[in-house]
Image (cartoon, rainbow over all chains, first blue to last red; front, top):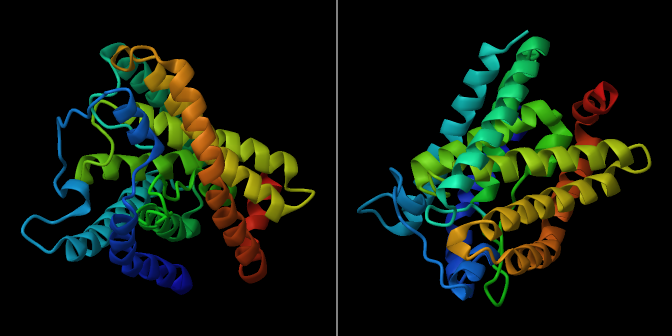
Amino acid sequence: MKRALLVVAALIILTPLFAYAAELVGYSEPLENIASNLGVEENLLYKGLLPDYTVGGLDPYIGTLISAVIGSALVFLLVYGFSHLMRR
Amino acid sequence: MHIPDGFLDLQLSTLTYTLAATAVGLAVYLLGKKGVEETKIPLLGVLAAAIFAAQMLNWPIPGGTSAHFVGSGLAAILLGPLQAILVMSSILAVQTLVFGDGGLTALGANILNMGVVGVVVAYIVYALLARRSRVAAAFLAGWLGAVSAAVACGLEIGSSSIFAYNIWVTVPVMFGWHALLGIVEGFATSATVAFLLKSRPQLLVSEVKAT
């Protein structure tokens, strides 16, 4: 369990680095490329509370790190909660 | 391969929401009947958090066309299909609602692709091949989990009026790219399984015996 938590911490710490590297190579996914080739545009109905893993007003890489912490914690709580309701 | 808003028309959005809700509902029902082992719950949450964090690591592949870890295969192998569907759906809901990653109108489709199709395909592959070699089976499960989710995504957008029903473009392109990029997913999945086989074999044993 302790080791598993360390793995999560390590992944979280890596997120700003990968965000920077993704920017360097001009990261885009096949789905986005198909859409732009076919002239389809995304329709931003809802941006989210922390749009695109950033925190408004903060440096984007710090925002990424905070997003990783918040997202991981929320996912943990959600899965923990649901599983707890269905415990044996 | 998170579908944003504006890619699916109303019919597809409704259809994919219905299918996803049915699959998740069934998984929750079956899981509720079986019950989740109480001692395993914390680890389940931590694994889900780990998959969420791993999904944030976009692979910096030169040229730019790339992807990130999805985790459908890994979740299916470690947790079995029912818990994996629940874990992947929770991750996708947080990504959409908190971070705007994946559209609200496409959440059904994204859960269907990465939370159901990828999980079920990966689980079947792993269950069939694990007896021969768990590490090789994990590679194929990880790879096919990602590829099948991508193909499902291609089928959906290709059936959407917004993509002018270009299904003969969307499916082959999604398949081709993710067949290539999915190799990374396969390696990551099999490396994790190989590592756990050495350090925490009981995590894997219980699941295979359960099948």
